[in-house]
Length: 265
Image 1 (spheres, rainbow, N blue to C red):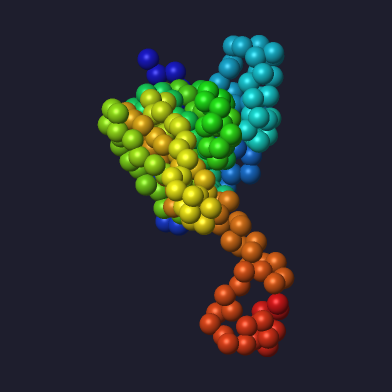
Image 2 (image 1 turned 30 degrees about the horizontal axis):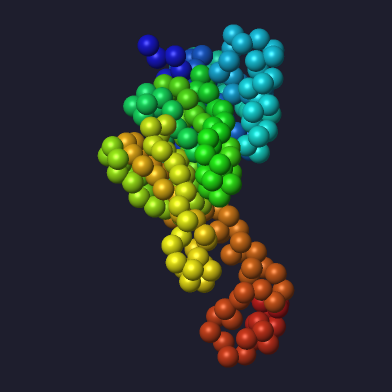
């Protein structure tokens, strides 16, 4: 029996995407603060404590559910958008940076997705947005996302966002592969997540790819991103700082040429 609200959606754009959610009367979608783009008349916006999935848990349960969000660096509050009008209404949410929005039908994915801490964008009301602790010490210390990742549970639609291009890989039982820890967006609850030390002293010290790989073992689905936002931010920062790692655009004048063409440093 379906417990979550059933919503229809439309994805717009390519590299800078937004998702448009179509709501029937009395249907609700929840979203992270700051992702709202536009909505039709007749939709009411309300700030809620936590994710709104624990409607019968009482005040203490709601406080505990909201408090868990602080552990993954999110706000205590989320925003709920409910269609209080007549007929279908639409509300849209935008991705925070260049990349792709991934629609997830949790009912077809085992009812559970584990994702990086800032991947969640929006979901049908009733989907639980919680935390997942890494049980293995090594995975928690060196896995890139720490001991805590975000967990989406339910049987409705949820949407996550990641940077660059998204690769979806289906793993068979016992099948495993290695991936950069920062490139993992999410995976189904049946996938085992561990870390592996990079072999070879030269590879570890001079390879520039970090000391550890993430090892994902099936069965289940894995989503990967080609451009983690941390990688994008560090590259932009290196160019923005005076004397940073700039290429000079091929000019033999280097920094002097930048002063002459108006680029500053």
